[in-house]
Amino acid sequence: QVQLVESGGGLVQPGGSLRLSCAASGSIFSINVMGWYRQAPGKERELVAGITTAGSTKYADSVKGRFTISRDNGKNTVYLQMNSLKPEDTAVYYCNQLWTLVGPAEGSWGQGTHVTVSS
Image (cartoon, rainbow, N blue to C red; front, side):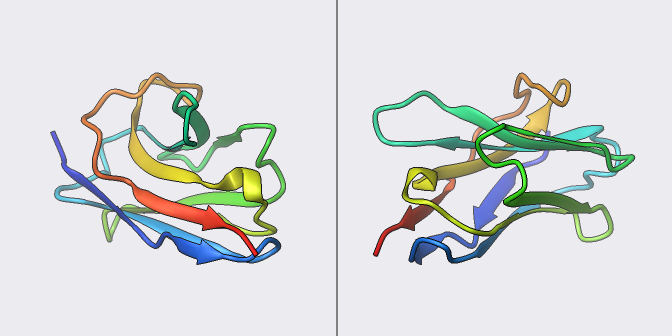
């Protein structure tokens, strides 16, 4: 099972952008679906976006049109480009293998990367 390390979080003003990265310790070529989750303070973890090896994607309604998920199998990395950020996007973001584009997650959870959207 590959280990996943998330990075790229930080403090950003509303309307700003961030690009998150998820680096895998091994090949993700054979992992059909990868995804990003987030967990806001006091809330359950929710699936934000998923992507298949063929490039099919699915997004939560709350981020549709603002977030873009992508993957680079050669670099064993999955990305989440986040634009037009809102305070309600504040959360810890995690990546994981998914069973399908709508989940559930299959692998172990990493440390995540913190995203804070605030003025």
